[in-house]
Image (cartoon, rainbow, N blue to C red):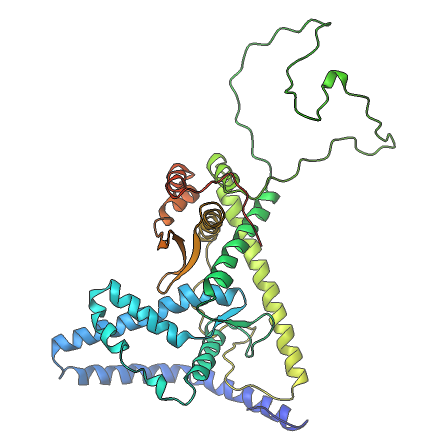
Length: 394
């Protein structure tokens, strides 16, 4: 309910805070009540045939798994990018249908999902699905209560291009920013060699490679550098291009690079999340000041956090594996003709020749955890990815 009038708004805000306090106070009692209801239901279920009861329990668990996969693997990446899928109810039907193809225990889902869904009995099922999807984003991610420029809906048809591809390129860009800030890779020490004899004074040095536009050292004109105390060191070389080969070489040849990159990625992601939370808090306070009212049941805890977070914070190694995977997928899209896709149970997927490649995780973990790049290089060769080619970043 929205309040109208200068006096009604503060009163409703006060009532809302009191209601939240009372709800928090009865949280333990609600938990006890839920356990009592579950125990009573379990006791009544004893009269049902054991085989039917076990099948029902398994299918309820599979339905929960379908919802959990859809929220954590499909919806959560979009929420983190400021997009919210607007047809979650339709998405869970697709997820359960996919589950029925993969799990024999879910065979019954396919026949029941082919019937007319109950949501079709509503007057506007699409509007209800959209409202439920926005509420789910509010509860499980803590997004704004209303759509806006930085919080817009996305359909399932646009999901691969607008979420999956953009997510990969954002993570690849973040990975290269971190690599740019790392200290230079230490050169491996070469075995001592015998000292070369000094060249004759009159003989010019011919050890350089002649390239277009390059003047030999012995015949280069004198530089007219300023002598006012400023540094005369040559400018630093430009940062290497955004190539997959650069990532592989750094993680495979530097034992400390994995830990450094993982730590800095964690710090970078945490900083970006803090900035986003601050922007949301600023928008929320501005909206609250502008609109004299309160939105009931907004699903936000104190501090702007979601009431029911879906996943614990990712570790540095998990972040590094996700970012390397994103870089590999960008290279595959740009150099091997692959395409971003959507798997209803696993989220973002890489499509090669129209088929999903689900065998990328193990080679990436071998590089991230052990510094062994050979499995990943073999995978790239099989798919036809050219790691030396620059990729397009966001």
